[in-house]
Picture 1 (tube, rainbow, N blue to C red):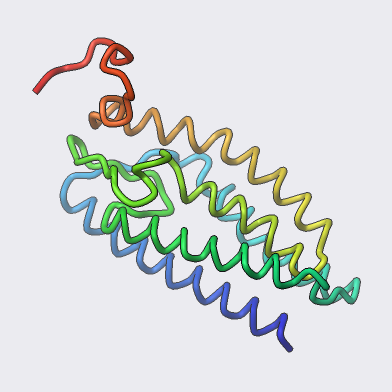
Picture 2 (tube, rainbow, N blue to C red):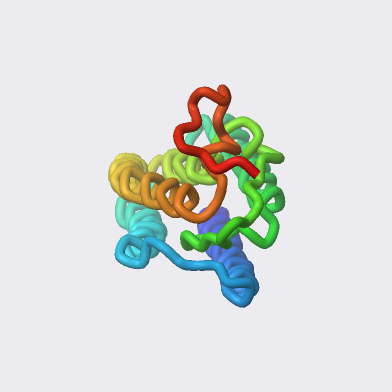
Length: 186
């Protein structure tokens, strides 16, 4: 029963996030934002959807249970949830599951974005390992860690290119002004 409740809450959270993303997408596009990454987005959706299918099947078919180390994995999961909320609220209306860039939009450098460029991808990577390990679903943890790494190897460069093409992203994250090449000064 615990497993089903946990999965139900996770899926509910993801559906809520998709609704927020859709609202933010509409708002940004009304302001002139441009969407990038159309070709790889369906693969991201597929990986994240199949993660839940794989998790459920592995736990049910192989009669997996909560790991004896559950306090560790649950703690990691809860820390990741805090990080997820922190990243989402820090981006505010700019947060999305798609790559949607507002030309000349401000670059968010607060919250976790003050420390790393893509904290949400780190959080998702942690979740794709921790959630299955919480229920001893080792095949799901391994498979979706690999698939996520493949997706992120496509997604992050696409997002970086999009942000660099329409905003002052490179300048916002430059640690040293000498790292900036051919930058327009305002």
